[in-house]
Image 1: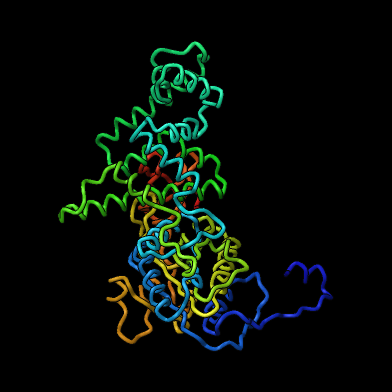
Image 2: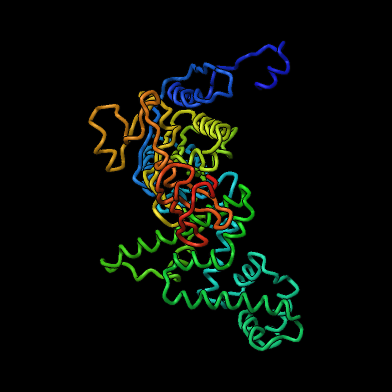
Length: 473
């Protein structure tokens, strides 16, 4: 639009400033946010709608506590007569849906993923789970067929057809046929495909041996590393590949959550030792129809990209943390930050009557708890425009009763804010390295361009590298 006005200086501009959807409170919050974008034409958006409920900003202990906040609030809204189908939950990345989905299922609240697939239905998640099921039971022919050439390792359909023919001829299973070919050879297969098949069999056998003494979470890390799955995604480097890697990171978190919940229940005698089989049984219980009721409606879950053009009486925008929203890939570019801010504005203005914003002080990334900081978008909203909720113990200790002080030290008015140190800006950031792939910064020696960063890489573990050799995002 700005280019159009420059190219056609005689054009007349008509501002459409009346909003017919949202309450004045929602518009005040959204307008304060988008006013921080420079590449825009100023608008004074207004509405004749009633004031309505205040916008709520909630600080949560972690992503699981954030999911509990969403569930508790939805239940309260239902008590006030709001239909479940009138509620939407927005998030920046697909990977964030996993914790929310599990919380909704546990609460027996039906939901639908808009513009995407449920977490455990995503191709990369199904691939990883297929590896785990084959390790647990290599006679699972369906999963074995799924992973034998994923990622691509040169075992094509023709090779697999010959292996299946051998299995049928000898009356054995697909896995047994692969093992026999590896040990005895096969006249109907050339030497090259035999070698590739043997390499796959060795990979599975090594992982099965590790399964006897490794936790399920560590075993999944080994799968993603030794199979080359994460390495292929890192080489691809596209936003789609990065999103798939984030989903696999979230699957690791899911395994760890299972292990911790099982371990915490053991002293009471209510659970057994967490095992790979136990985790796979838990995943098998996930059903698309859990809690579904047509007359009750379903909560809508979606990324903020999918939310454009939609509207709902009640909207939650979850995960408004630096490096999450705005996304870590945008942090090095002013233009990218402005686009992220536009996305956040779109998410907020999808709400007609109620808007809930939330962020977490810890979020699990790469199977580890990562400290979180409120997004700059949170800090850009004047505190008088929101009602604060403090679920975190740190926030409750910092916030004086009946005061409008920030819930944490870092959420302050823009005018009196102090920029975080370069060291603070690095820690928790997602970065990419040309050799090691994507990782998360855990520590930094100093904030200069030659800083030594301690980074956790899923593919190779923890490494120390110079800051100039990594890219943010």
